[in-house]
Image (cartoon, rainbow, N blue to C red; front, side, top):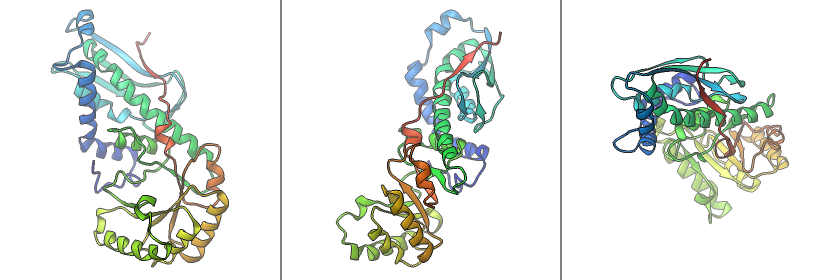
Amino acid sequence: MLLSPIDPNAVALPELAAAIAQTGEVRRLLELCRDEDLGRPPRDPTGELMFAPGDRRRVRLAARSEGVVAGLAFVPVVIEVFCEHGEPIAWTPRAADGQPIVPGDTLAELDGSARALVRLERTMLNLTARLSGVATRTAAFVRAIEGTGAQICDTRKTTPGMRLLEKYAVRCGGGICHRLGLHDAVLIKDNHIAGIAPYELADRLARAATAAKSQGGMLRFVQVEVDTLEQFEHVLGLPNGLIDMVLLDNMKPAALSRAVAMRDEQAPGLILEASGGVSLDTVRSIAETGVDRISVGGLTHQAVSLDLGLDTPG
């Protein structure tokens, strides 16, 4: 799942999509999708009965609801996985990932083997509808905090096997990616520091952060989670630059504002991220405290698939 040396927040969507495809993770996922739908060996008896080998069909991928599209970049991989030798499908995008869409919009056109099109239809729709749902929900959070200077970011609360794709969809919706997994950053959470006395916390964090920084560019950042201002005070006592970010977990806006003031006074370069139970109703009040980032697990685990379909042009 490594995207190195790609920073998922520092490149344009086409470059990020290409880097994700090059990992092989998308193809591996789609091969599982193919096997669960077509079995082993793969076959679609309905399509074989209804279409002759040479039958062709032209269809369009159409929006049936409003939102933000995501996942079009990976449809060519779907076609590669589901099409047998001698069944080419011509894929012509008419929209781009990250683009707002409304009902009736044509997102792409597909032309080729009728048997192949009915084999890949459901997986293609499942993938693009799911990712478009994540992008659409992300865009709603991004709109809710416009003008505050804060950024919306995701979490690891993703669908198993779809993390890179769902994080790509967050980018399509205007959000940013947190760590990709446990492997690419250090996030010292409450379960790592449970039982450590407050007066010991700074020393333990300093040792862990120093060891992490010694690994050079292998880790994208070092972050510490705190849930009280007392814990935060100990983190602020560390040398500047040792900790890149602090996650302020489940703090009320008043406490967040106080943390921002403490940061501005003692460690202006420290990035502050708020998290915990963030909703569309509360996200703006959190952003207005002055935090830099707001992580929202619901971008992925509460997203509803967008309604997309394959239509035959009239």
